[in-house]
Length: 102
View 1 (tube, helix red, strand yellow):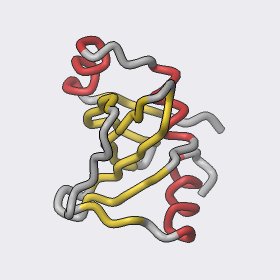
View 2 (view 1 turned 90 degrees about the horizontal axis):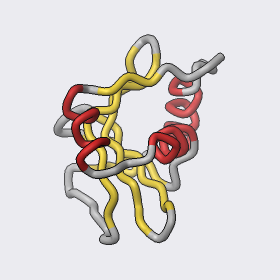
View 3 (view 1 turned 90 degrees about the vertical axis):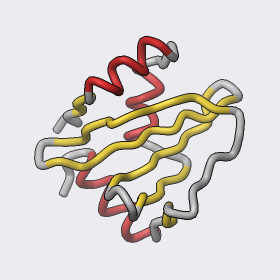
View 4 (view 1 turned 135 degrees about the horizontal axis):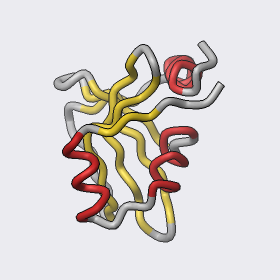
């Protein structure tokens, strides 16, 4: 089953204005290096190293896939005190749901 990925209007604007590669977005959703839960906003944060930078995606899991809220590249380590590292079991369950395997 293919992953359904939707983009908020804000995310679409940021893809264009920040020259984000769509291939980087899908690679980050499918296989993040790190994944966190933003407990304040109820979103997931996926981080992946690409070409010497990190791409950071903020998204939500919906019934039919993932919805990207915002995204950006950075060379800095960006972590918030509101982000909680997910356990291996939680991450596995999210990966399965994200990829339509659950």
